[in-house]
Amino acid sequence: MRTFPFVTVDVFTKQRFGGNSLAVFPNAVGLTDEEMQALAAEFNLSETVFILPPAESQHTARVRIFSRTTEMPFAGHPNVGAAYVLAREGRDRHGLLVFEEIAGLVRVEVARDALGEVTGATIAAPGVLERGMQIPVDVIARCADLSPEDILTATHQPVVASLGISFVLAEVAPHALAGAMPNLQAFREAAAARPEMKGRFSLHLYAKMDTGIRARMFGPLSGTVEDAATGSANATLGALLLVLSGGNQATYHIVQGVEMRRPSELRVVAEATAAGITAKVGGDCVEVLRGAARL
Image 1 (cartoon, rainbow, N blue to C red):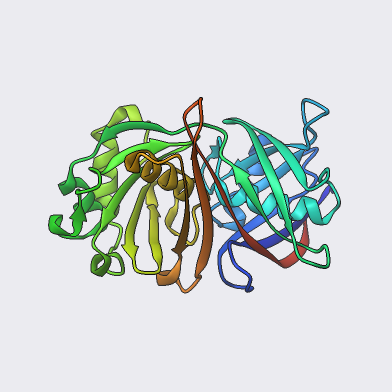
Image 2: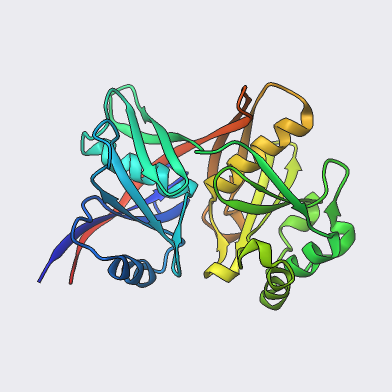
């Protein structure tokens, strides 16, 4: 029987049982693809991370991220959580880590407190902002069980955007955000009508509040009815808002997961570079559980 230790952490929070839960296998050597997918389904979290030796020795690790149903090329909170776990094991180099992933290299800065204890991390998304098709307001309204009037278009039309993994981004009226509810059939119809999206139709709603930005992310087609904190989606949102503003750099404080009673706080910094619009996303983490899988 083979034994594989794991750690669970809550990401984008300072409090246990807040933020977005994540399972990390710090040494996944020996696990097959099928076993990784089965373990991710067994944990039943939005993502589970498996750490492997890097292909290039100058990098920290090869990181594989699995949702309940499929492997993902990149995701935000799994990278922040994995960096937190590995840095606490001393696997960073002067506060930096570099992860090899399907979407490319992910560079990570470790956060520490005054005593030198690891508190979290900030990751740089592996790509630059890419904008795709616009999605009709009525499609967004049906998917989120809202009225078309609740979808705001003064800043932008609902749009597909990506920094390594795509999301549909839509602004909604502040009063409408709490009442949104994913309609699975509408999500299926929206994805089926757009075969170029290859079955991925994850909807990131946001509202501008006096205190910053509040967000919710629905991904029922991948098994995540609602996500407590979506680093990749919020990084993409920050990049989109920056390019629409015409600025060179902007910082956003984004709160997600309130309606799930798992409040999460994300820090997003978007920047215009010669290559395009890039973004970083970071936050705090706390360890919750330790154990081992025996296969």
